[in-house]
Image 1: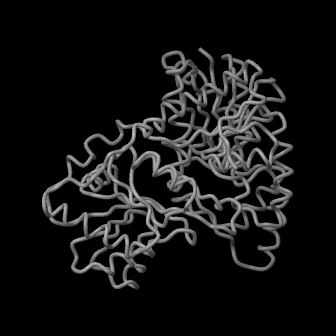
Image 2: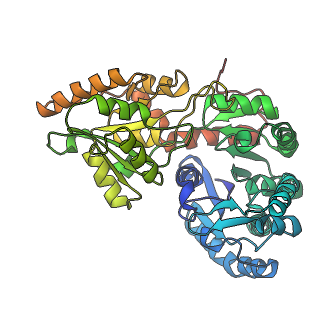
Length: 456
């Protein structure tokens, strides 16, 4: 078997709460790649040990835990190594950290107030473009741990997860020292959170960083196309996916027998790009309270205020968070799964839509999807090709559709759902196989000229 080293700042179960979809990616690669000939070592950052150690502490930690890692690798085809990060990565990193408030529960940042602090933060942010983002303090620990692994066990290929950017910095440095081939997995566009003045500089910086990389992976065709244009490297699509066994007994046959139609959405929303306005307009047009919408996620207060503004608060139930058992029970009761698209003609990144990570989770749940609004782009195409639901741009049409489905429910008739066999293409196992094929090609020197998508 070949051995893959994945450098992932975020990885389940050691991730920050707001990175669930992204953190699943390296974890699922580690789960499925052994089935296609790859042992996997995932080096990640332990959320509860971020900004906690000195360089000396990190060295002792690596020495003390290395025997355990190697033993796990001998007994299993995949091993997950959670590492702490240093208190800071030097002067500029320390300066930047002093200018922000860190929410230790969520792992998010807010700038501190004050003109001088703001100026210092902006200057240090510019310097850190060349050194690393908020994950910079993990780079040195990850590099030392990776070099220790290289000395003890053969590593055939390196995959750097992004974002944040620590994995890219470490993989590039490892390649310089060991000549091990590497690639990068961009779960989101690099330029997404950069302002328009910084984007040309960031593009050039990453073009330089990725010069030695074999190829780039992204999660949809359009973003892979943008990466190919921006960074001039071979690019491939490995979508997020689903594992059917995660959602046993959630399909329509297990729907309770009641006279209400229940729509469900779980997770965050991208404000201001996404909202429930169209759905709430449709609910407003419906008489009575027989169609209910259930929301679970961090935006529960925002959604509750929206529902009140539309005068449908009796039809909407919001929860801040549910544990896994309660979440699955909520899904079992749902008749439809709501999906929010993004389509912004003025945005280069979202001009052709995107795949929300939960669309593949919805495939596994096996219940019809209501996508609002239609993006007339890649998400609509995906739903149409897999026959997993419908997209709506008009609240009156959606209202009429929900009325029709409610009538079926009351008449004890099944709600139509006949997904196409192409849904199976999006299992995490199949996506891991795609990634493996690209890595094998890179090792054989065959990656140049390859392409797995056509985007016009």
